[in-house]
Length: 273
Image (tube, rainbow, N blue to C red; front, side, top):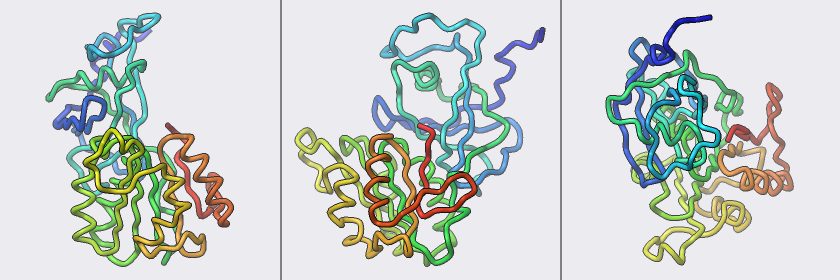
């Protein structure tokens, strides 16, 4: 049996944390050795020991976690793939979960585990040349798109990119200021935020309604000039499984076909949620 203390597996430091609100957190994790290469859209594993502190609002753990257990979960990377100092993650607090209550309690400078590599096929690798890219997300499903945009918009100034991001309230729209700035600076980027509870957020002046409703109403086409035609655009879906299912059904009626493993299609869905 190994005698290695699990905490000795910690190999990274929390060098940045921005609380979007009590339920949403942007984390910057800096490894103590060289950072691995990754493709925009991939995910990496974070880990903390079960004995680490949890936020007060976390649910009671039943049964309690074993004290020397390393809890690991995969999260999409939000930082640019050309950034070699740190990885950024955009996570939501799951009060009944094991890891996020501990991640939210981790202070600046705290140590944690970062897995040795990135994984995942939810990338731009198979997008056909010349096609526009429509990135649809709810909540923290935006994370892999931030990596794509932060990486690609530096040099890719011709391909149209459209971001359609849905949340309950405007204060849940993480990265909103950055995306608005990017859209002003990059004419090939269209950013469309939307909320679903406008009655509780009366000062929001953007679009309201569910993602699939905005798609059906032609909002994306009207604002971006990108037609919902699989011959001209490829669509990515990441976020709430119900949203992804309804959007897939609607897009299938327009001729979009889902990618399956290495078999390319015009619709790419991140299954991990």
